[in-house]
Image (cartoon, rainbow, N blue to C red):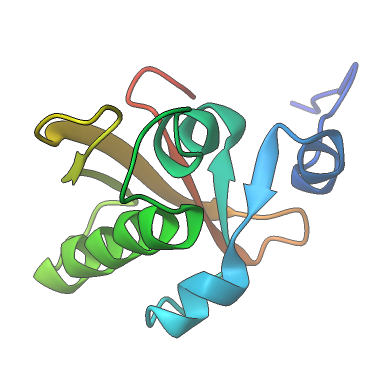
Length: 122
């Protein structure tokens, strides 16, 4: 049975539109081989520093997300979907545990890519 596509939204288009944020260079530094992108929701909620929050910076928060993904990957799994936790401080109180979802899937050219998203995102 042949399938006909009415419309297709590529990863490249999502990156150009800002729905995905490419963090592949920092991911490489963290030891992740495949290209990595965050959804704009993850970037806004857990990478950008909320106004008034002290002792936090974008680079450190991004590193924490990617490093904890690397740790989760190193634990080993046969699944292309990994749920993992990290501690995030979005106020001047104690950090809170948040859960992120990372999916390894084919990119636009069928190459392996990773997308990090909120648990409810697809």
